[in-house]
Length: 501
Image (cartoon, rainbow, N blue to C red; front, side, top):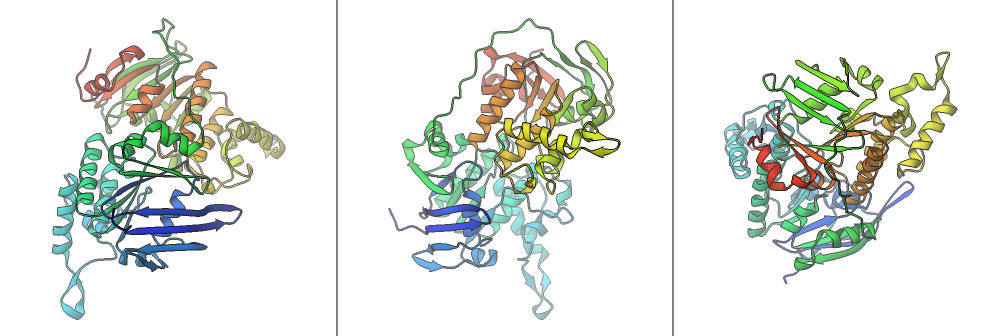
């Protein structure tokens, strides 16, 4: 094999109170796809931020083409041919697609007047959009795009850099199956043209599909690597967490129990002409599957009172209830773990304990004053119960990993004794170890009698964790499958609109 295009050696990085990287090595050869795996907090993001010029290492060496380099800024990294597609979207929605793709790098003309060559940026952006299979105009305002389309704009921006080393951090987290297939085709084309890819994802099936090699980090250190035929889900997991994870799902026979929570003929703002009806039993995890845009999140938001439903009835234990706001839902013991925990699930600048107790502050108050001792006691109990990895409940939520942030979202609802719990993409952006903990928690909640609705775009998650699966297409349920009827084929058939009804 040729000499590495990139060689990172003995990289160390310490933040206050945390050793993020401890002598980490990473080599990438020309035209190689290297998957970088590890639990949240393992050091992946820190290592890539060093390569991308965001952070500087405390010690260690970076060589590109055998030459030692110092990357003092993002501009330094870009000038060395390093492109970075970040997990968190970095688009400006007041600009159009082309303006976002070339932001800060606009080609100019007219000599000293330095006028932006708008024709050129639209032509070049159009080529990148076509390559990605994104059927939108380069003149489309980003504010009018879906989250998935905005993610593709980020990818187009990276392609426009003509990078020799491309870092892709969770690039498919918001993409549909079709968009993911288009991205994979682009990645393979880049590899064929000698571009080196560092691919970070928590979807281990993507690693097996794309990667030539997997490098695994654990607790800021190299945990091992796998090549070609060695790559498998279980081997990656064992390197990531240092142990085997129990992925078995208890066998569940079809139940004759009555449905505890039911939605009847619910119509949302997105699909006002299509109605949704389904129910979930106590102790059951009902998977809600469908393609992106099927209307699943809108149904969850209508149930929780975030959106006003056009029509429909909600029944709890056989009794109709009226939900006009989240307050109504909370009073009835119905809680939503939203898909975007950072925007709608947490107050990032507040402490863990404050986030946990925020939905029910009056319960910790006497004569209008919060009893801090009681608040602390409740927060500490659920903090310990969920094994949230943080120094204390006084830490701000913004400093936590994605998996631990998700646990804080769960903690605030668990402190209120839920009857119905809706999880919208419960493990998006969460590593495999934290996923296993969340799945165990969901199962324990179900076993305690909570009715759980789990919305997920991860087919492995739907098949692995659901007792039954309801499938949506364009705002309507096209079928409900018992566990023994579930397969990827049967779910996808319903997801594209082939109703069994």
